[in-house]
Length: 255
Ligand SMILES: NC(=O)c1ccc[n+]([C@@H]2O[C@H](COP(=O)([O-])OP(=O)(O)OC[C@H]3O[C@@H](n4cnc5c(N)ncnc54)[C@H](O)[C@@H]3O)[C@@H](O)[C@H]2O)c1
Image 1 (spheres, rainbow, N blue to C red):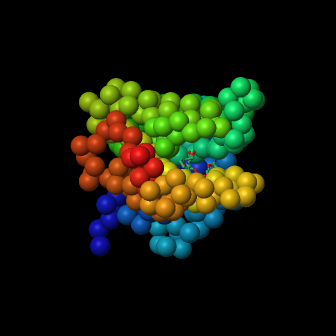
Image 2: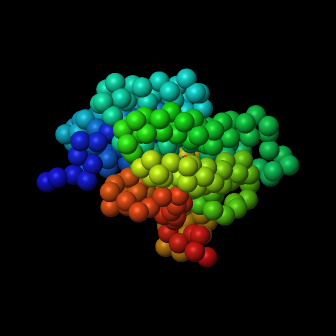
């Protein structure tokens, strides 16, 4: 059966875990050759192996998205490996670092780290990807924002600020490159069952149940539920979508 992304190359950052791994597998399932990028080589290797076991094609690229040299090299390696860059999922991110700490108590080093990866990292990735997509006559970019990019959440100010930044960056950049055939959208997940939030849940008793109850659907989301939205935004099925921040959040932001 023909896949939605047959013959295309998809690049995923933060592909060694959670949402990035699920999206990598979904891209591969639909026929894309996948560039698995992460700072976590072990996790990345596991994703590549899962793709290959399912009959897909993938390569691992070690890249820290907060470093311009890395993001430039990442795109160069993608093109070298597969000859094109058609879809990019700029997804790598870290949690707020000091969950449940108030703004006035937030450490400057945590602020800089969260901004460097979660916001500047998305910009550096797009800065590297867009020229290649222009050369090819178009492409589709999906950034990972969050419900924290749409509404405020207490105790994680830098994360919320960075994700609102991603939402704004997505809109602004979509306007700039629409005429060149590049669609740029963001996905805004609610709380998703991945190592990123599990670490926080493990530290605070009862927090997971409290967070699950904040979603009208009454549960956390699964990485595959985000991956399907990313796949759709990346595919021709979403050909009239650009500049949109799409909530996939069990109703969290509908309240
Ligand atoms: N899990 C959630 O509830 C949730 C909700 C909304 C948004 N998000 C966002 O989704 C994205 C993916 O998160 P996840 O939940 O899958 O987390 P995760 O921790 O399972 O995966 C994140 C991956 O990003 C990688 N990474 C971290 N810093 C990096 C860097 N500087 N360069 C390259 N790779 C880096 C990690 O090594 C890891 O493999 C993040 O941007 C996160 O903010 C997650």
